[in-house]
Length: 271
Image 1 (cartoon, rainbow, N blue to C red):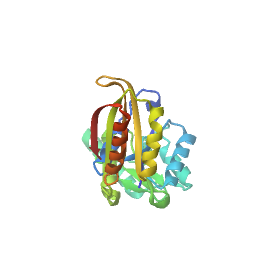
Image 2: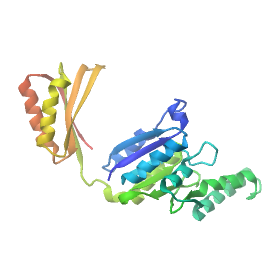
Image 3: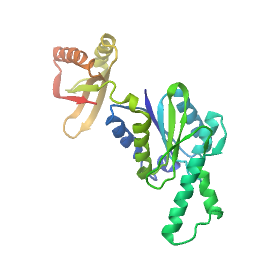
Image 4: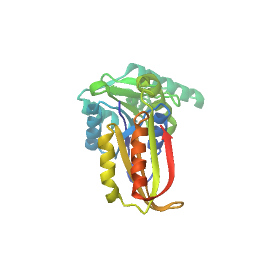
């Protein structure tokens, strides 16, 4: 199973706010032996959101979507999800009950009577209108839920608010409640070495050779021109299933030694 992330909102693309979701989702996945495969950033534009969600539903992946599920004019995600799935938007009884409960709590905290027919309270119930067939994601922060919709081939898209304080525990709940079958199924390893004075174009044939001789292992090259410790260098390594990496790494390392290239620190990371 692959995992993806969609970040929705003009405020991210304009630089008004910095995205914090990607780093956190990488962390939450890594804690469970999983990895993030793809990320989309999309502004508050209905056609683009709909197309991003259509791809996500068709991918067969587990995809988290953050942002745009409120009930203001610039929140389009719920409508776009329904359009991408070609299903209607319908009131979700459990979601709306939770929203009413939240509104009652707020009125009690403010010492005022709860007025369910007041225009702003009626509008808040729109946050409990989901694509047909959706299931809720509990929100421990303020009870207003997110939702999940099934996609193709066992995949799904899970919708959370843009606020990290709400989104992150909701994403973690989805992982713990709906994704445990994929936890730690194949431990991953990454091994690399710092190379000084090397050129990627010269290393490319060796990289291709290692990948061809070791199916399931990927070779990576990360050049740097101004590293504070190593200066200009290339970090060259292999990554993949922990059982497959050592022979590929040994072959790569021996080949690099034979070239006479100056090598720096070696790193092993178990993921």
